Length: 631
Ligand code: PRX
Image (cartoon, rainbow, N blue to C red; front, side, top):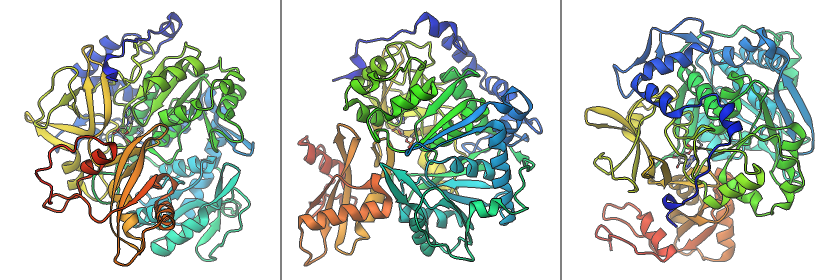
């Protein structure tokens, strides 16, 4: 189906229009691109600065842009401290529920206490401004406290998603030379305890830079604690040094706030670096405008804080906006497929922001599960991570949103820090399109020469301007950042996102998918090269190729082709072993759907694996131009 021809357009109700934070997209958009710096300066004024900036945008070393340079700020001063001086002080900041029904709530005041104590613990362990602290945790409040504690003292956090495994954790610790690791004994998933500490132990064996490991007690697993290295957080919090007040350290607007690793076309994941100033302005503005945030809102971004979605829209954007955030550790369908709908009813959630994969996963259990619950508190719904298929969109809209909640489909990336293409609640919606650029952004769809293609034609998604939330560099590899993302077209630096897209006759953007060798599996981003190197690290494997093939629930599933070492017998048992091996190295999300044993792989004469040929063969499609094929 050509989605661009989907005739359905969904218009906002009068109620949505009446309460919109921004009611005229076109007028605001025009202003924001004609006076980009003026627009962003106005947004920055809504935050608390220790010292105001000298320049809004410094383009002197493009594409290494600086935003609000000369300004001093700390994102935590905005996410917590300033709320303590007004009515938000006793407002709920975090509502947490664990899979087994445990409940913990924190007001802004309570959150401040936790973060101050954690910050004092970090200081007592010698953590200083600019140090990189690696965090590997389940979805518990301490993950949020740890991130905020680092930021508060000017340290840089590097969160590794708790679903990742040893290799991913070890390589990220190594890359950042972290001295301190924060982890937990374990997490919960589907009634089972997930043992994180032993994965952390294996990673620390591989990455000797860790001198201190702070461990949060979250379940009943017996874990090994190495006496001179490993400390329980609750023991450290009991020490006199861990007082419940701690000054927030002023940081330069351009000082790094965090590093977050993401998969790319080649090699190992790259550490995207985000800053205190521009990122605070961008995440809070996008969140407030696209999701019409109101003071009384209960906001639930059902992602993991360990991914960019969680960094920007569980932790920073919503807390800066003084919202109440919901955090749930557990599976969406445990013990029954109504778990999420029950949470929405129990807590009166107003906005749910999740992924197409999650929606498709819950949709397959049928309407009877959501229908058991009163979901009338919902005002808006959001989607992120991959294109949403119109069928899932319509189910989400009619069954979950009762036909009255606009769906805010947000297109963005780890690199962009926040929403780049998304509707406002007042925007007429077309299911499957993230609609129009967010304020300040000019987006064109171009061919290989950077020339804009005609309406409805597929091309590369290009962003023509800098924006405050943009990653500033790849950690310790500025050249890679420039080479990977930026191209000079018509004398101006442009950002190439690595996605293909179309713009229809109304200027609506339809993102199609990645053009590089990045896979989106259940909305998670993985590099084919990472899966391949995990396979090759198995003693039986000589060479491997990974491709993504369409999958009804996951969007894409990983199919792999493996050449075995001489004399190794190819059988089903080995295929299962290889799947498990990738799972153990990288994490369950990277486990291949299929392992096929082959004698050779299609390669170019220069030795590059032609993954598109493998994919076309698997799908029974035309293999395209084979002129560069080796044999
Ligand atoms: O291909 C796009 C897809 O996810 C990629 C970015 O992945 P990641 O850095 O993991 O960030 C995910 C959360 C922001 C993009 O290059 N993507 C993300 N959101 C959408 C999307 N594709 C289509 N529609 C979206 N709303």
